[in-house]
Structures are given as structure tokens and as C-alpha cells.
Length: 169
Ligand code: ATP
Ligand code: MG
Image (cartoon, rainbow, N blue to C red; front, side, top):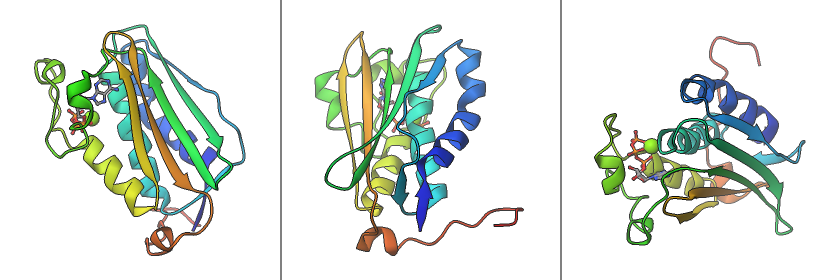
């Protein structure tokens, strides 16, 4: 089903404002408005929330997270989450999308995660006929980019429609 990217972003910002404000991280949205992607809204919100939670978890206090949305010429929508965090070593970059993989810097953090967030993001993007990429510099920050089809693809059409829980549709 067609999903409004602005609606995804509103939901994502709502679900991440508490952890962001706890670290005084300012989240800004520099989006092209009115974009549509094709797929399952709940899964897409989960994917972007996972990227945002990482951006917040792996950044020092009082940094910024910038979310950008744009449309590419070949029928994809890009949602990019950029942080000013600890960054990722080149040798870890290939592996962070594996289930349970955590880089040393993250493993030694006081508050642990399970290493599943990015595996889920990868799974959701692949399910949608899209993909996820990362660029990162240690000590500078990381940018994760989701590319999702803005037209119905076979992969996206096979996904179940989202159900509004407790609300009229
Ligand atoms: P969780 O299952 O709670 O999400 P996690 O955050 O450790 O646990 P992933 O989200 O899959 O698991 O991330 C895997 C690893 O990739 C992290 O442990 C961390 O080493 C690295 N990583 C992910 N996002 C970032 C980021 N924005 N900045 C720096 N490192 C990151
Ligand atoms: Mg995570």
C-alpha cells in the first residue's frame, strides 16, 4: 500500500523524542515533503526508529541528528539518518547488519543492546525491494541511508497492509 513518508517521520520523531531529549540531542528534519513509498507502514516506522535509536545511543550528549528525505530519479525515496557520534571502524562496517554483531565500542557501553536492530532494518528494506547503506568516520559520525521504492514493486505488494491498532482507518 502507498505510505506517506511525512506520516512515517512524524511517528518516528514522536517515538524517539524521549531518548533524544534525555541526551539533549537535537533532531532536525530536512525533508522533501509529500513523498510516498510503497510497503508496510508499521515495518517502515520500525526501520527508521531503529536507525534513530542507534544514532542517539552511539552519540555523545548535545550533538545533532539530521534526518533527510529525498526522491531519486530512478523511483526510490531516500531516508537518511546522520549523526555526530562515535562512528564505526571500517572493519566493522560489513558486519554490523549481521544478527547479534556489535562493534567493540558499543559492546563496552554501559547500556547494552542485543545487536538485532540493524539486522531488522536490513530485513525490512530488502522485503520492500529496497536496501540500506552506511558511511561512517570514527570520531566524526555515521550516516545510514534507506532506499525504498516509491512505486509498487513485487516485494512491496507481497507485504501485508498495516492495521491501525485501536483506531479507525
Ligand atoms: P539493538 O538490538 O538494541 O539495536 P545494537 O544497537 O547493538 O542493539 P544494531 O542496531 O544492530 O545493534 O547495531 C549493531 C552495531 O552497529 C552496534 O552495536 C554498534 O556497534 C554499531 N552501530 C550501529 N549504529 C551506529 C551508529 N549510528 N553509530 C555508531 N555505531 C553504530
Ligand atoms: Mg540498535
